[in-house]
Structure formats: C-alpha cells, structure tokens
Image 1: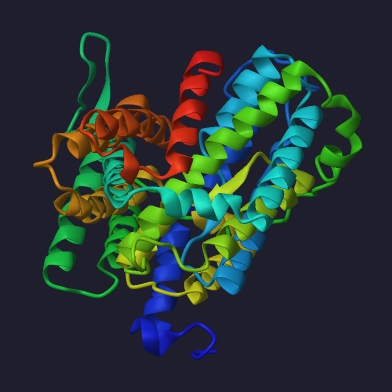
Image 2: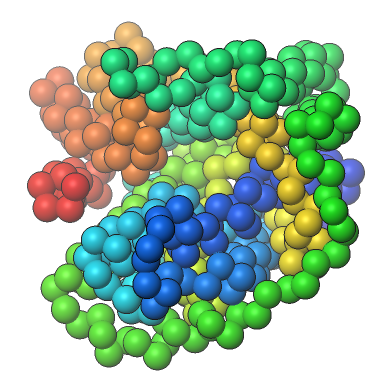
Length: 440
C-alpha cells in the first residue's frame, strides 16, 4: 500500500493521509445537504412537484457520486483531491436550465451525462492534458492565489463576518452574533494550532469548534447516530432515459456551458491543489490525464445516479494543508462519504461556523503563490492580477480564469513576446472571447 501511493517519495504516512482525508471530507460535507436543497429548489415555494427533484434521492446520489469520484481520483491518479457535485453548476442546473429555460430535470441530467462523455473523449485524446500543461506558470500561480482569495471570501460569508450590503455590495456583519462569534473562535484556535506547528491543525480546529458549539448550544447535538438511506429510485437512470431530448439548440448551449465551467473549474482546482501539495514538476502536472479521466468519469456516473456535474473540489486543499500528499487521502474521503449515508445525523454538527475557519486558513496558505509571480513585468502582472481579483468579485473560478487568459496573449504580444505564447493559449483566447459574447 505504501509503495503504491508512494509514501516514502512524498514524505507522508498513514496518520497524515487519514487526517488529511478526514479534513477534506469535513470541509466539503456541506454538499450532502446543500446539493439536495438546490436541485429540489426547496427554497422556492409553490413549484409543481414534477419540476422538483426528490431530495432524498439526490442526497444518496450526492454521497455515492462523491465516493466513486474520490475513489477514482485516489486509485487512478493517486492525488489527494476529492470530488463531489459542484456548487455553482448545481445552481445553473436548477435555476437556469430547469426553472428559467423550462427544461425537465430528467433532460438536464442527460445534458450532464453527455458533457461527461465529451470530457472523457477529450481526456483520452490527450487534448485536455495538453491544454493544462500549456498554461504558463505565472497564470497557474495566479489561479492558485485567486482560488485562495475566493474560498476565504466564502469562509467569511459562511461565518457571517462579511454580509450583503445594498450600498457597498458587501460589508461587515454582526460580529456579536453567536454563530459568527463561534466561527471567529474557530479562526483563533486554528491559527494558534498552525502557528505552533501542530500537524492537522485545521482538522483539530474544526473539531474543537464543533465541540464548543455544542456545549454552548449553538450547534444541535445529533438526535440519533444512524439514519435510513434514502432510495435512489426517483432519479437513478433518468439521464439515460431522456437522451433523445438533447438534440436541440437549447440543449447544445446547456451542454457547452456544463463543459466549459467544469473544464476550467477542474483545471484550476487540480493546478492549485497539486501546486500546494508540491506535486507539480517543471510546471507540469504528473498523471494529469489520469486525474482528468477520473473527474470526467465521475460526472458520467453522477448523472446516472441523479445529480448535477461532479467535479474536483477546492476544499481538498484543506486536506493537503492538514498533511495529505497522496491518493490514499482521497480513498479515506470516499469511504467517509459512503459512511455518511448511514450516519447522516452526525453531519449536522458540521455547520458553516465550523467549516468557515478552515476555508479562511486555507486561503491564507494558498495565496503564498503570489510571491512566485514576477510583478515587475507588467505584461505578466496584468493578466495575473485580473485572474486573481476576478474570482472572488465574480464569485466564479471559471470567470477569473477566462479574464486572465484573454489578457495574457494581448499583453505578451504587445510586449513583443508573442513567440513565447503556446498556440493553445491563442485558441483559448478565442474561446473565452466567444464565451463572454454568447454564453454570459
């Protein structure tokens, strides 16, 4: 086992990988509850039942899709990256495709299925890996830093530290609110553990925060330990039964959007987490093809089970920060998602106040890549900065990547460095311009 996962080469051990896998799971466990809520549109009243997806079935589909995806990533690519149905894509699925475009959710699942198949073809052909390896180092560092700012912003929101403000878009929240105070406590505890060099400090910070939350009555103690596993019957196989409905211009746009967002969100996550874990070699991602195949296959499997696009999760960086370096951590995360099917009541203690400190601290760790960007060269600084700042401001990893990748060929060419630009970057320039014109 140690040899297969290259423990010695990566300087890791079972304890670090188990803590890392557990930390990743706890950081993304919210998806088990958020995804069913989004796909069933439970927050919208008076919708016909035919429009809503069954919450119980989506819960089970989410857990199994996450488990299979994480297992594939751990065993095939051997990366400490976990997968689950992606936030953002699930909102696009429900509120744009189903609610606004009035596409039945069964047909929308077929669109996800087809986008996954296209991903597999692109991956097997090697094109997807070539695209990622063609991205210049400066933009890869910018992507990592931008995602760091993005997830820190999410952490501040989850904590209630940053809230909506109609006058200034965002503003400072009520720092005296109990849940916000609990999150702030978690940040201080985690910072102290990290400064003291405690291995797994992020995980232990989350654990301590949850315990204190229960003691103070801010987190409900689980009423029971084991719950029933909801049936998959309402959603299973619907993606296969409605393939004849996807041959329309409307569904082509839907499929291309699923493709586009998942492609670059996944690319950004793989690059950022691998860079954080020290797995990048000569600006290239080893076994990138295998990692991309695992991600693509997970989308296909997830759609058949009954959930929106399954993708690599940036929360995996929390596990890396806790010590994970190999695919064994992803295997641990996969097992925990399967166990979550039976112990779902226990996940109620993993509230936003508990996960927010982890996201904030991980963001701090990830922006370290800013120091690797040559800010003295303006032709590099412009696309790097725009990539970084656009992610949190647009609330989209893909949008940040798109803006930066549009500016990079322009600034480099105007500086007389056009020959240094990989041909694929010119192709991406055209694709991103068309994306903003026709799809945004």
